[in-house]
Image (cartoon, rainbow, N blue to C red; front, side):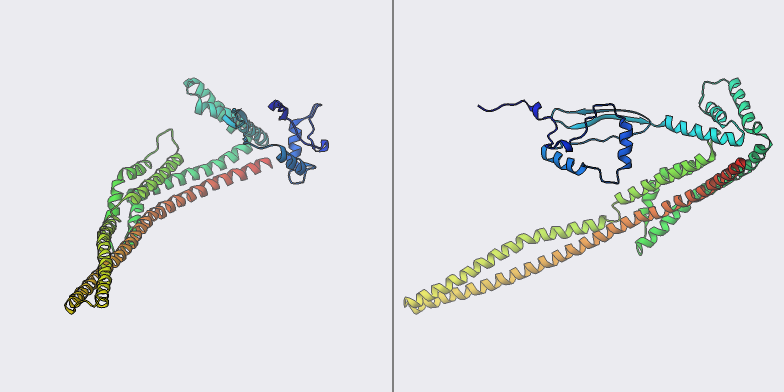
Length: 414
């Protein structure tokens, strides 16, 4: 007699009041415009939104939600399993079309102000850089057209500005070469390695850093890679790229050396062994203390038993000879108990001393571990500071060239 209804009967909007139900949009609607209007009103309270949210919580339970956000050419697959869980199977976004459109628009706008076809110049440069199948004749033609577009079509004004920009580019190239030479010299003389060793010496004082120097020696292959990265650049590679590659190798060396220092056991092996020995002493003393305590408790029980036997003999008016014998047994029990109490005190004192020694060795091990971590931090302090300084020098050179380009561009607009 149970009233059976299909589950689909419940898969519908269950809001009791029609004024709170969402508009089904029977007529045509612009979803993009609705989204934009929703974003504009995001900071203001929306009519009925709170009411709908509360009513929705009454009749529905959320299983899970997924959200996707991408720009440009986007491909994605959203699926739902048998119990209602949504999940993203795959997603990809390619914004290159948007980026190229923005770049082409900027080149068109700037080229018009400079009386130069920058779009064509960019196209020619891309062909020269990326078209590996082009013949020598084609490349010569493209290069000639590029030179004509950049140097001649702009007229006298652009030629003058090109010359000024060329001087800044020459200065930028000179500074880049100097930076690369300075970095190469610093690496060849081992300046940064020596700085690390000096910091290790101060960190480990009064101990010497021979163990850490051995770790550094083991990383010589990574250091050689850094030095080799600063050598003469190939013809198809700019010196700025060589400098950046060298700094990346220097950063990789920092990570390798830091990891090797943290994994090295030379700084903590003695403390670990001493701690292990003291812990073994504690483990060896624990059974002795337990045996002494058991013997002490047994002797105490024997003392009580002997005393009670004397009392019973006196109460029963036993012979004086028997009572004297029982008293002697009680006296012997007391002496034995005193010996066991003394033995227990000695064993407990030894255990306390051993445990105190364990605590001291644990502190020593923590200190040694902290020193090892400090040594790793010394590597970070030297290499990270060096990389940061070189990056700042490069940024200053780049900023000077960009500023010159910006100023010349504003002059062309005037």
